Length: 326
Ligand code: NAD
Ligand code: UD1
Image (cartoon, rainbow, N blue to C red):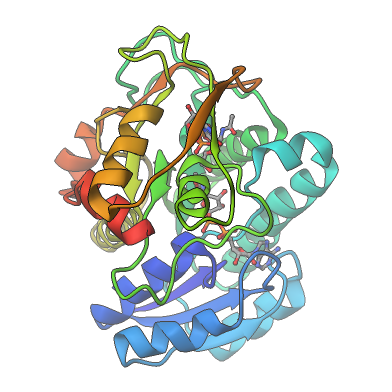
């Protein structure tokens, strides 16, 4: 079984690549290093002791995709490549629409040309917009609050239309909640450029002394301690969810399946600070500031559908998430 991973050197792609190689899958990766580093390739080989084929290039470019499909008999594609920063997407919407949507269209067109119809897509809990009730189930109404989210939801619609037009397609859409942590080797992980936007990378930089203090965006939400609540999931659990999605596609001939990948448990910002301090022994200085525009109070998944149908469940603890992030 040969699997093509786009965005293979990124945060979630690299962890999924490790899990695939560990299970004996043959892997082909493509990345243009717009948000990752070349060293990731050697580090993946160090962790697994295994090799994989890699192409440097842009997934929007059909010429390189055709070269990949000509040179390799690809059975399944997992599509991670894309831009993911919410704030940046509001400033540069065209760049987000161009990259996220174009890369997906090019990929789907070339897959169809080469008669490969097994596709796993990285979607996000952001497609639920502002949920009215919790926990969030896959059949909840969909809406978005920023261009990044709109690219994800648009791609979901494209995939649904594609399946309707041709039942040869066999598609899994995975909606991730908040991935954190890193591989326990410490050789791969999340390394945002500049000042991080997301909570866990920010906490790590404060604990390491690179940043002075964490700004907690609001403590007047309707949550147990007033700070925002999210469903943080260890990236290795998330990577394993892709293996289960792949096994699902191997079993099915056709269909479009949607799953939440989360733990089903919500932690507040203050819970995260406390857990991080306890598991690493490092102090995290913080101050409470205004709410961040666009944030919601609480967001956590109902992961039951993935449990029932993919036989997947997150197993790592909050302590693992904090230790491995550190
Ligand atoms: P990441 O930025 O670490 O990885 C994406 C990789 O894709 C990077 O290595 C980047 O260089 C590459 N890339 C981007 N555009 C490309 C292109 N046109 N051609 C080739 N390579 C390209 O992001 P991640 O956290 O690993 O996320 C992977 C996917 O999961 C993304 O689609 C993201 O939107 C989605 N997602 C991420 C999160 C999260 O919190 N990390 C949450 C929900 C969904
Ligand atoms: C953000 C994105 C979401 C994306 C996800 C993973 C927004 C509005 N949403 O989700 O689309 O899928 O990242 O990439 O950006 N917090 C602080 N101080 C900080 C950083 C965060 O208090 O410096 C709080 C936030 O208010 C929130 C929680 O920590 O309550 C988590 O924030 P973050 O890690 O940015 O993730 P989300 O906002 O859930």
